Length: 105
Image (tube, rainbow, N blue to C red):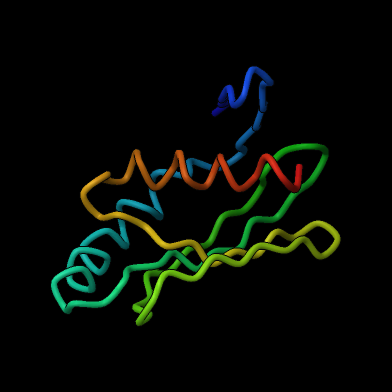
């Protein structure tokens, strides 16, 4: 799966060797449950990079009392914590992930 997203007139090209939507759809019921608990739903994820593309993607749903955003790259891994608006759906979460990747790829 190849994705291209534009931001501020510049383009970001991300090549996915895995389908990013599968893990997102898998955890989405947990995201909705967290949203109903009067907490802020977050994605906690790990992306593994190889040859300029994403070859592995793991993500979990967690609750936090306030929106917290964290992103760092360690060699071929990108780790992130990202607050998500459940109302934006899986597709909105995917777009948020692409936005944070622009700073590290």
